[in-house]
Length: 405
Image 1 (cartoon, rainbow, N blue to C red):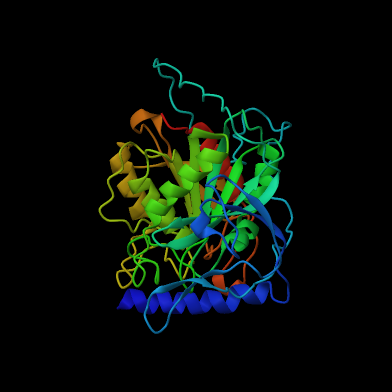
Image 2 (image 1 turned 90 degrees about the horizontal axis):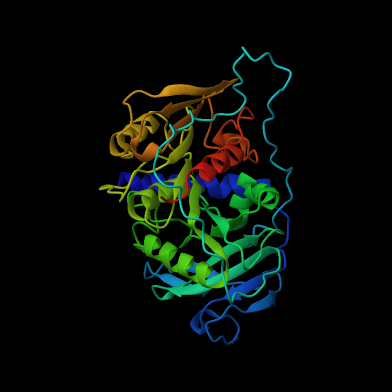
């Protein structure tokens, strides 16, 4: 009962605060990719191949929760929160080459380099064949799963080549949020255009939109009992059938409920997702039995009132540090981490000597709120957004070091 009450209060807080920041806008025109004929809107047909259509503002339906039955309606319209605003690009933190060599450069939270191993180098990804070219930019895709139409936005960078495998990052929104807000919040597409990787922003289920991360969040985890891990599997199958994806370099991140979902994927889908970077969340999946050691970089604020840094017995949330302790034991790391970053209000601790040289890092912002470090500053009621570290930049550096073995 306390989790349902918490979910309702959290939903109300976000529903009030987030739309206020972006009120008064219309919806953008976008490209939609329909994966199955049963998932098409307005009578379009499909043979199962990717098909693009032009979607006019406010025409795309979304799922809604039927108050009378507690089930999800497939095609109820979602109120538009407006187009994706254009925020400033997320800039990296530059090293100062003029610093004396004796002074340690702590401008980026790099974990200690893993020791050299004598094992064979990982095999390069196989080039793709028979795939069609894709226009750079945002596309809206759908597929049928568990009797409902699921939606996800795919951002394709200018460097995309249908013959060359490209890394992919799954980026999950928080409770009551959506794909374009997560894109705005994390500024990940800006970085993807520079670095050359695909970003997928999936949409959750229900009203408010949510993900089933076991203990949170309603309605996906309670009323709907949404099979979201299975949905991610099917979504990856669909993406890999149409895009040249480097299957060894698929990564996951997310905010809040999206962070809970990222933790769940680390527990249950580590055979397909290489590394993980949850933001403003903790490990709620129990039991958690990954198939291998897990590279993971987490970001939490000590003044987060929605996902408390020190945990909450009432809510059933472990602390950020307890979550790391679980992963350190699972990965066979040294029990005490070492400091690898310390700047202004933020520091990062990294566990060393983990099995298979995986890395495990927790970045903590003192007095940080329920926010994305270095990201778009969401309403002040959710707390401080630090500028000392840019989570999106640092997690991408981390991801690049940790492909699937």
